[in-house]
Length: 118
Image 1 (tube, rainbow, N blue to C red):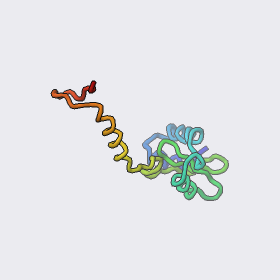
Image 2: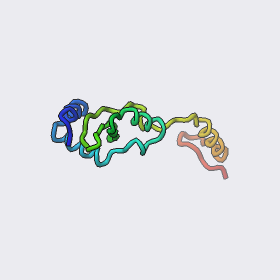
Image 3: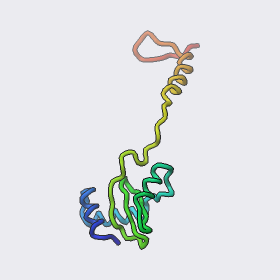
Image 4: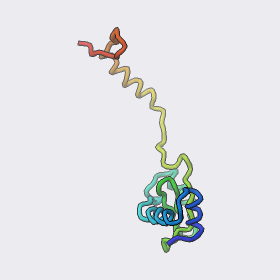
C-alpha cells in the first residue's frame, strides 16, 4: 500500500506514471536495502531520516520511507555521495607496481608498445 503523497512524489521525481510508480514502490519494499545493510556514513544518514518507528529503504538511488505497517509515506533521491566507495590516494601504489613490472620490458622502436626482454 502507498499513500497518495508517495505516488505523487514518485511520479514527480522519476517521471513514472501511477501504475509504474506503484510497481516501483513495491519493488523497493521487496528488494530495497535497509540501514543495517550499509556502513558508517550511509547508515547514519538513513537512521537520521526516519522518525516515529518508520524505516528507510534504498532502492535504485532513491530512499523510500515506509511506516511499520509497510505503507510507503514518501520517497526522495539519495545524495550523490551515497553508496560510493571511499577513495584513498593509492595512485603512488599503482605507479610503483607499474614501475616494478616496467623493468622487465623495454620500448620497441615502433609505435605498437612494449616487447619482453629475453
